[in-house]
Image (cartoon, rainbow, N blue to C red; front, top):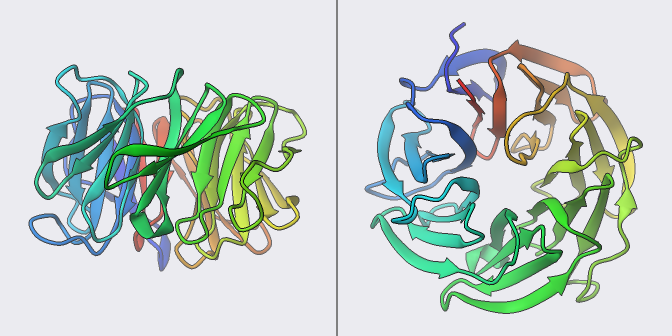
Length: 306
């Protein structure tokens, strides 16, 4: 077993660890992964955001560094990202309260999305990639027309947002808050957020939210390491899991495996994987200070402070 700043697991062989090639020589902050990319990008792509304002592009199969590019001349810290499948488009939220839409194939900036008045804690794709969402500590979620780079709607949330996630197909957005609660915006039901539900008994701030690929389940991880798997329809916890403290770094969501059968999350110095059905621990890896995880490819990916 090797250790490194980025690592991957095969979904069919969960305990097996593979180090991505080389150290990336900077502080790593966030990760986004997606497949079916076209030339000149690797088909399976891992994008890693850094504290010095760059995005490192890594081949998700070989682990080799493919390219790196800056998000802006001012090199703001990259806080969170989302990578679109097949298109090579990346949303990157930075410490300057802006979100940039980058064309990774052409290595160019398409749009800079501005309008939030506090830190952007999450961004992502909706409606098959024609719309994007951003969520902020200013207490709003904004929907964006990706082609025009313009705001479609600005929606108040129940309070400052500490983490958020969305479902690409349904357009459902889930926001986490400082009191351990999660609120849902379901455009199929209404145009405003439903009342927030407190999922974490300790009422610690939510640091990560993830929806399953089928849109039926939600994962929420709090600052105290507690992880809740809830049925989205009723927002009732199905599983309560825990990892060792403290969690370090920017807000970072736990992950479902692509088939929804497993849950992956980071602890203080370890990565844990459980069965999503019964909550049984499948495997655990002791690794130096994990800051984020992703499981949108066949392989799970974790990024580490070292």
